[in-house]
Image (cartoon, rainbow, N blue to C red; front, side, top):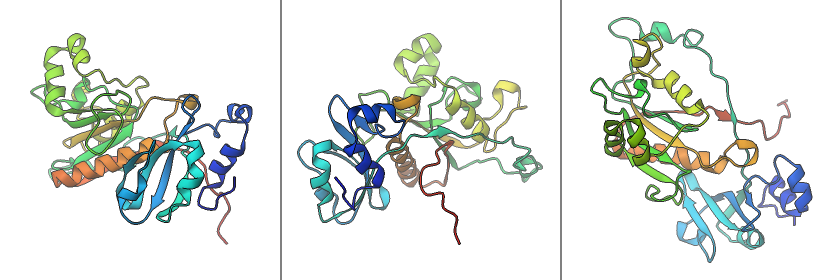
Length: 278
């Protein structure tokens, strides 16, 4: 197959043998060999209704994008639909290193009576989750600063408009906190197994309660929105499709709440052209 609407890596993946896919770190990303289905990123125009079909699951995103799950055998025909502009294969995401507050000149920004605190704004993070019991993400009365937490890896109750995971509200998180860790984590079972999401959210918005204010984050009075990306697959990293859905979710939440939002993304990769500009 060589379809101009399908990106080169996806064409290569579908032309490769199963053994070739297994040897590669990239060719199988987005593909489920048991069901022979792909998660792909689609750029489209026109109505969303034209994206669906038998055996095809669609999550429309903002800006004319969608995450589509469909059988591999259907990709060729799907790309021939008039409203489909481009189909892209998911890529793996990687952790990025964050610099300290001092190197980012945050300390003088927070200094003085007029220092910036993040009050009345939202900080959103799409990462490996969060330890919602951590004191830095709780108010003085012990309640959570997290307004919504979407764990894409726990099936059961996805946010409206999405098809994977479970969304937990602040009320549910506060109920879990009141029970204590042993019982609370049964009620809200989401965890940050790597600690990466907890760390970056602490840098972005931790209020410093765990360290008596010494390790306070940047927007330490902000409200929080958290997305934990889906279950790790190839080489223990999530996918660009899950990242796009997470960002889309955060933007929609901020729009509904009518609040400004700053989104932290500490995952990345180096795919794409590396040719210099002339």
